[in-house]
Image (cartoon, rainbow, N blue to C red):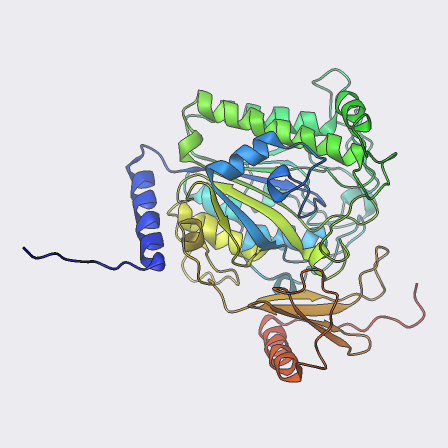
Length: 459
C-alpha cells in the first residue's frame, strides 16, 4: 500500500484560505460590505485586546477574536490629515503633498483628481457614506478652499465639521457645526455618530455599502459621557482629570462609548444577516497624545516618528480574515486601500498606481512580509507643540532608522530587542544605518518628498 505525504507550506495554506474565503464571498448573493471605523489619537495599547487593564472595550475585543489583530500596524504619519489621505487613496502622504495637519485656514486639500476608496466603491454600485471627521481641507468659514467628501465619492455625508474642532466639542450644541440638530437627550457626539452609523446600515441593508465612521474622539479636549465618566473615576488607580497621562477616566469613558458603537453596529449587521459578509475594520489616525495618555512601552506619542506616534491598533474581521489570528508583520496606513479592494474583489481602476501593498495574504495566515520596508516623511517648518521635529524614518525588518532634517542626526533602533527605542545603535551598527539611509533617500526621490529644515530659534 502506497502512502503519499504532501508537505504544504504555511504560505500555501494561507493562500488556500484566502482563495476559499474569496470564493465564499463571490458565492454570496451580494458583494461584501465595508465598515471602516477610525478613532482619533487612539494609542496602540488602549484596547483590552492590546493589554490595557483600565479601559473597557468588550466589543472591540470580540471583533479581534472574530478576526485578525495586528501588533505592528502603523499610521502613514504621526498626525491625522496625512493618515486619512493615505487610507482613502493608497498613496504616501509625501506623494499627495499632505504631510502635516491641515489647519482651518489651510490652502491645501485632498485633490479631487485623486481616486478614493469611496469613488471606486460608488462606481461598483456601493452606497457610500462618511459620518464624522473629514479633515482633508481647510474650512470656507476660515477663508480656505474647502473641498469636502461630497466631491470624492461619498454620497451621504453626516455630522461633518463646519469649522475647526481642534479644541474638542463633544456635547450638543456643537460650536464646530451649529447647524446640527440634536437627536438624543443630552447628546454626546460619539453617541450621535454611533446612532447615525446604525441608521446607515439599516437604511442600506439591501445593497452593498461602504461606511466610513470617522470619530472625532479621543482627540483632546476629552470629555466623556457622565455615566461612564463616573464609572471610571471610581476605579482604583484612576487619574484625576482629562489631562492625566495615566488611566485617564475621560479617555476611558470616550473609548467605551466608541466601543458601544461597535456593539451596536455588530447587532445591526446580525439583524440583517450581514455580519459574515461585512469587512469590519477598526484603527486610529496616529498614536496617542502624550499629555492625555501613556503609550508605554512605546516611546513618546503623537507628532513624533518614534513608535508611540506611529504604531496604532488595527483589527480586521470578515471575509478573508482568519479568526483569532494575531499578526506581527508590519503594515502601513496606505496598505489598507489595496487590501480592502482585494478582499472585496474590486479591481483597481485601469492605470491607477498606489504606494500601498495589499496584505490580504496576512489576513489569511501568511507570515512573510508583504513589502520590503515602511517609510515616513514628516517635514516641519517649526517644531510641533507636542514635541515632534522635522524628520523622516524607515523600518525594514526589525531595524528602524530616524533622520532629523535640521541637524542631520540619525538614530538606529532594533525593535525586536528595544521596543521603547532607548538604545541608539547608529554608531555600533554603521553599515545597517547607512543601508537604511540610502533606501530612505531613494524612496524620498521616488515620491517627490521635500526635506524641510526647521527655522532656528522657533519654539
